[in-house]
Picture 1 (cartoon, rainbow, N blue to C red):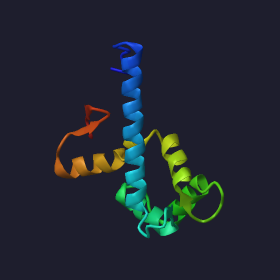
Picture 2: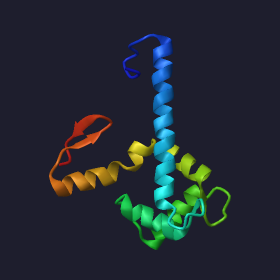
Picture 3: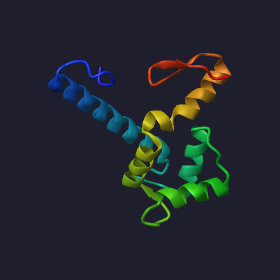
Picture 4: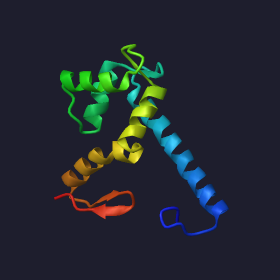
Length: 122
């Protein structure tokens, strides 16, 4: 595995390429999920809906804070590139969806699997 350094260099590079491809696909699907208008950018309302979906705070002040952090060009919307930068800063798509997964698992009483390992939610 990549984490343990097992395998030859070509094998490790192939696995890394696969992980990068999966992350890019997941990121594109997430952006599309949150882009409710389908115009390839996220509005303030899209960000509010995204926060609600991800179980993050979604009050106007919270949206303002996220817009200030993500909207690099100050256009009032979030482009895919700005979203990609933000998700990279928070640790990738698995980190982005971690709170939602914890919330769902807590509600259903099932164990949470984060980064392939069970996590105690208590």
